[in-house]
Image 1 (cartoon, rainbow, N blue to C red):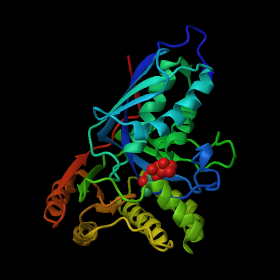
Image 2 (image 1 turned 180 degrees about the vertical axis):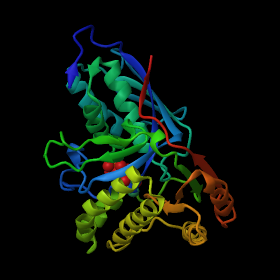
Image 3 (image 1 turned 90 degrees about the horizontal axis):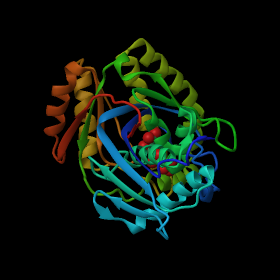
Image 4 (image 1 turned 180 degrees about the horizontal axis):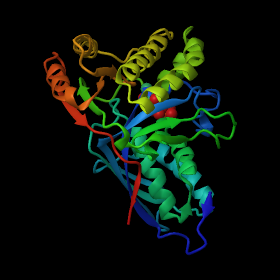
Length: 339
Ligand code: DP6
């Protein structure tokens, strides 16, 4: 990663990044035996949409007077979460050869840790703000590979629109970064998130995927099918073929969850409203509406649709018992560093 030739960075910077949802999912790592190194090298590539309505704003200020990193999350001190942030900042400090602690102040405009991808937007914003503050000048691919080390899916939130995160082959992860497939303007899809539970989930995605790959008899089949699913989704996006994209999106989601449920003990993220939501969306699709669903490591149902189906998708989901509210979003931009 390039270090600027000028002064050693302003010491502080702010960045905004947006959440993403995967249509072809990331589930499983290449080296689950090595969690300490935090490389988050994925067992599979993945393809996502960056959303405009769910964002994280993070300010980083390096301060020589500090004796440890300080984290404020949504206006509250969070010493418990600070260790993960500190491990990430250690990577940035080593790259810049600067050994100074930081105040990190981060705000999400959506519930944290409830399967709404707060770690993706959070680590993408942190990677951009921390590198800018220390005068590093990473390429977009380097920034994506860096964000990946905070949380795998953060690699994708560096970019806007339709994004493909490459699995990569190398042990150092240098070839495991995301790249834009098409900008948000290519195909203005809409996403409706049905919130069925605002509480943080019981099993985080890291633990859920580790359990799946260590004990599920379906994990290997999941890995083997991924390249075909990615090729299908890429072609559907480039051709703006909604039916084709809907088929592969639901297929990838249900395969991921089926492999997780077959772990021992099973990893089950759904509640009753999640399942009712899936049936409701299937009902709309059977009537010919351009809608499909996906679910991440939590109980929320995420619906991808063409703009003309958005109102119907919102009304249908709000009528499902247990759905607390819906959040509608368009596709958003990549990470932005603020002056
Ligand atoms: C189900 O990126 O949260 O949302 O790399 O362990 O931090 P770590 O996992 P994370 O996993 C996201 C899993 C998923 C699918 C996806 O976003 O592709």
